[in-house]
Amino acid sequence: MTEKPQEFDPAASSLAGEVDPAVMEELLAVRGSIDNIDATLVYLLAERFKATQRVGHLKAEHKLPPADPAREAAQIARLRALAEEAHLDPGFAEKFLNFIISEVIRHHQDISQNHSSRNA
Image (cartoon, rainbow, N blue to C red):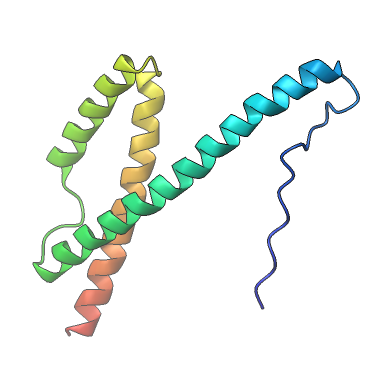
């Protein structure tokens, strides 16, 4: 049985009643923007993983390796440059991309294993 997700309260804060109401109102407005950005990031990551799943299936069908170190290095260099341009810490951008890449490779390995076992 699937558990119903807890309802999100955009006004949840341990600061409620502790700060000036005008400050709280501004804080909640900015947090509302952050919440919208977070939702967008989740949907963007979902779309990215849908695309990488297709890549994983192509690799499995054509017996290509799950990882592509040259592509990964190029992507990291590209994202570091974009991060600098965007005034985001390039080290953070690299860590974030490395995390995503490791998940993608894990998915590609799973796809390749499932493809091999079906065709064995």
